[in-house]
Image 1: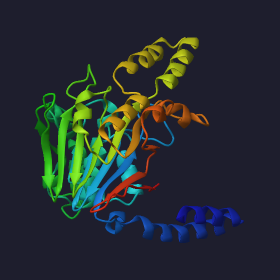
Image 2 (image 1 turned 45 degrees about the vertical axis):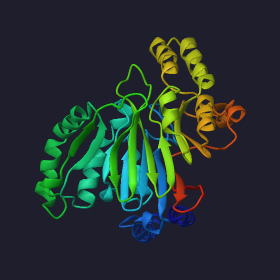
Image 3 (image 1 turned 60 degrees about the vertical axis):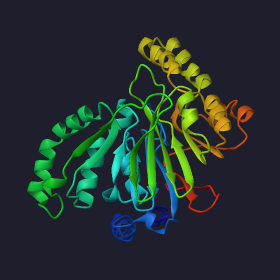
Image 4 (image 1 turned 180 degrees about the vertical axis):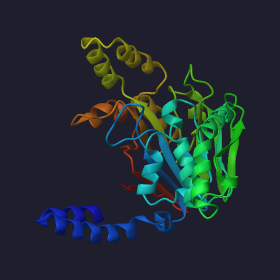
Length: 353
């Protein structure tokens, strides 16, 4: 709203000096709305999921790389840290300095490439004195060590420039917290603080292994995030009774169009990619079948593949879902917020961007 008013004001102002004066005044107002704001302070007690990245690896103007923020009571977690996700968190007024941990579902690049920026912003935005915990299945230490090495000089510069007031060296970087991939039918508690319990379970993203999803339980409310996976019987076991299923979805009918286009344009590498990705992602209809089987009241799609670039593409993406699932369905975009207030049955949706 602030920027809409600013734009209208600038357009209505004639000469450059007047536009500059207006812009400075608008910036002063905008700064009040952007700096130091904590939008979560007014949220009702409950389990909240905010999609900070609703897309996959392909460019999408409404969906960044895979990223979800969970807020429950005093806890704030990030699930995966894809491209642009942490910047969306800042745009939504969620204090990145209060982030307790990042949880990784697997180690594909579009789920981890924002980790360095996430750790840096968390560090300097709150002068954190402890590094960012990164929780994930076996292999997460290698990921964390690599990012810490890549950002080593950056941390030196920031501390030299800003000192302990902004960048205390004890808080730089990340620390890995690995857990063994749970066996089929088993789950592992990976976070249990302030009333929020998070359990990890294995999913099927072969040849990618380990790959896990996470279930979140807080004050009688529950939500499950699939991570990247084919249709998974193990996920279905773990999702029994959840209020909301936040599931990835790849639409084969739309990916086939992309593959045919790549073939016509003599792009063999892209043609093969669009063929290969069909066998390790669930279709929207398959996600709907799982949601129906577990009794989820709301199915929210994220990691939406391919980008929905044409008018009416969302309807094509959801083809067949309503034939198998009778609950509510949302195809998320960056900024989609799902709230499950404690002590109620309500499921509330909002758009923070």
